[in-house]
Amino acid sequence: MPRKIAMIGAGSIVFCKTLLSDILATPALADSEIALMSRTEPKLRRMEAFAQRMIRDNGLPAQVWATLDRREAIRDADFVVVMIQVGGLEAFELDYKIPLKYGVDQCIGDTLGPGGVFRAQRTIPVVVDIAKDMAAYAKPNAIMLQYANPMAMVCLALGKATDVSFVGLCHGVQTTLDLIARYCNVPKEEITYVCGGINHMDWFLRLEHKGRDLYPVLREVFERPEYYKNEKVRGEVFRHFGYFMTESTGHLSEYVPWFRKNRKAMELYCDEPGFGGESGAYYHWSKKVMEKYAQRDPLEYESTRIESRSVEYCSYIMEAVVTGKPFRFMGNVRNDGYITNLPRGCCVEVPVFADDAGLHPTVIGDLPPQCAALCMTNINVQLLAVEAALNGDPEALVQALAMDPLTGAVCTLHEIREMCRELLEAQRPWLPQFAGKTIAPKPIITIPEGCKPVEVPLDPALAVGKRFVELLERQTE
Image (cartoon, rainbow, N blue to C red; front, side):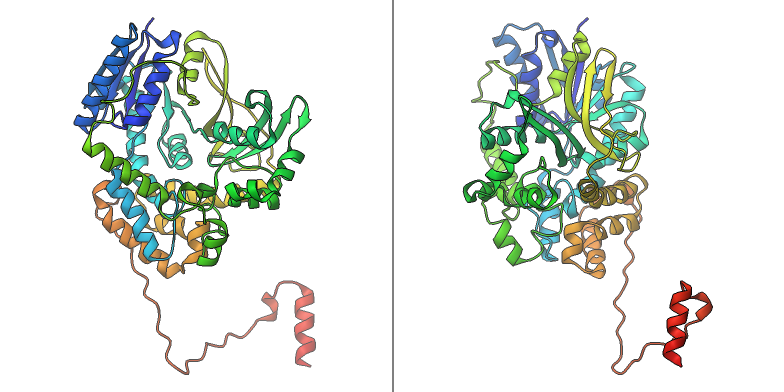
């Protein structure tokens, strides 16, 4: 039977076109009914017209139609693809520019840090509502294929707030394998690997070529300046933590405290242009794209010819579910014991199999302790940010940013609170869960000159350990 695919956020012209092309290039999906949904009608209608031209020009039996009604799109769907960006470029500009006033310099700003935390506040309530619509209107066992960032926070919230089947999808592993293949001079398709961790911090736990360990080769290559220069931050983390990670310098520099905390660190590690670490690289790129698209319809000159599929997992997962032919991929899921030294219920990225029985995540076990420790610095932020988004808790919002590695390396707690207050007030149009709620100020206490601290006598009976008491008595003799 033909399957129905709902694509929510179809105004995302470039990404929606890629996924549509992949779906229509898959024989098992070529007769699908595809419902495009977006809140921005001009873009939506352009995407609808282009998709219909693709179908006509390639002689396919698929049907495509568009709607502004999310429930209409989701009704009786087998798959729901989510690729929304709540607030668009207007909100993204605030994510980048307000923290910059406080010294928090972001390159990407969509996963962690102030940008990621506030994008989560805008996105999580909407994605949870999409899941609720799926539970009410989609077919039983319908699957959500979730692409919205911040990936880990959104999927963590889905795992807490809904029972629908979902998986978060990212292309970090695929693109990193391209880099590894080039650096080690082996064909990508011949690499055997096992990854585990969290989104944008996924570790290659096994890396082999025809039974040969590739790690010695990769370590040797990264000590050469011409290779190290391309990925300074990822190279440094590799050198000090022992395992290679899926995230590039621009992304990874934001998730840890060492590379963007001051001008010296930026000049040393984040000096490459664009996504190699440049300040505001993703915001500036997005702005240029929007300005370009405002001048002309980007789909007007795009070819409708369908050839091969992209590296995105989406169509391959659908194909596996429809045909029963298993497909292995890296997916973001609720941690139901898949990585045993990360908290249960958090979002982890692990190998997942898809077939006609659904989605089947696999058990990794323990990560190396140093890798788990670095993941935990991000998970702590994610847990608090999701608490804030689901419950409209402004204090959890402040606490999430207080635990953020980069923000904490740059700002005092007072500065973090003030930055959160400013971000919340600027973004209220997209944050209904905080209606009527504010972040209470905590003024800095002025200490008068000559003020002495209150002396508090130590009760030896409350001292920890007999040895401490004995040392204290000797000092008073």
